[in-house]
Length: 114
Length: 108
Image (cartoon, rainbow over all chains, first blue to last red; front, side, top):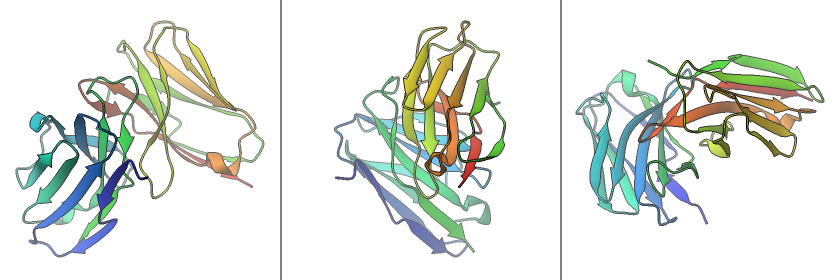
């Protein structure tokens, strides 16, 4: 069983389009996250959700909006895509935000904006 | 501002060699974590170090947390091609913050 699954694995789209990436975790974790990994492999936190409440929002453009229908899902919606949005996006989850047990990551969604 | 500096940035070695990668900071941490990320996958937790001076072993991997809890190292003995990947150290600040990583390539 996949612990954190995200879809799609690859996404190629044109500038200006709106797209969504879905994430689901079956670990019973109470906090979920979205990270962006750029071409230099640097992982940067974008959002985290705890019990349907946004608890962290880094300096991310408001074109990006996380949506959590329930504790097991945290989807990422992106409006008006730009070339600079091209990256690999990772969903993750943890039992608590300060968990010493670490985060469990999905396998990533490679977004290419053309 | 990145609190964690990882070195080297890239490392390419032959199978069977030993290596050490470093994670340094001027800040004190309650704990540090190491992750390995293989191509096309997300990072996977390897270890959490909590106590200053702590040494943890995971098969051929040895992790050490500095006495002052400002730095950590990862030593791999007799590296194998399966060790190839991006090694990331991270600290928790209400969410996990990562260093830039060391990209390790182990050639057969």
